[in-house]
Image (tube, rainbow, N blue to C red; front, side, top):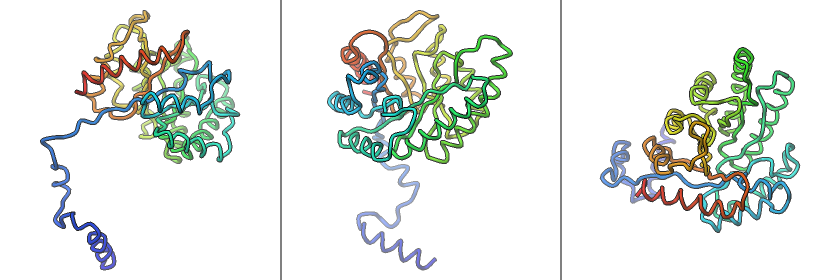
Length: 304
């Protein structure tokens, strides 16, 4: 005890500007009249350049440079774009990639793999769990906080879907344990495949019951008339997003109300990353320019 106290006093002597009577309550009450409004940070999901990255027209390094020049805070590089996927590259490559992102003034907001837990073949699902573990280890090495995964392919037959749902919970629990072991949050992306609505997401999250298992909130994958309500119902579990050019109201594609979405974000105190993603035909650079401008203008209205 005496040694600990001497050590504390020695540390305090190095910071004479800190009052010795400082308390937790005084820290909590500091500057309450002018609290800083914390804002989410824009990231770019590199799936926006999927065709170019898959074909080799662009390399990951090219998109790092693009994101830095465009003023993004972070990037989300899907694991598909790393050489050798589904195998994980050597540590030298992972560390070099991490360094390039850091030197560009960016962060890595997340990554993701593709899995299918609706497959009735237990062996194939175990292979997917191993894939998730391999990339969770890679994410840990690169300092990536979140890795998104999927539920699986659509199942329309009710009894079959119930059976798949039950084994998925066990698979997701194993994924949560993997995330806990490596300090990487496993985020289930709602992708309008096996998962269709917010109630299914909430049931899965509550049954897995782990802080290391949350959701990657894809605004374009809710397809009924209450899209904004669906988003608000699950935002408490969101650790990452996909902000897209389109949402679907009763299955019809419309431009999102980004002000409404960001107001939900603000009201629920989400302060993590908001990755943008553009899909479909067209020049991704031009499409991202428009999308980023719309989201930035909404930011200015909501967080001004």
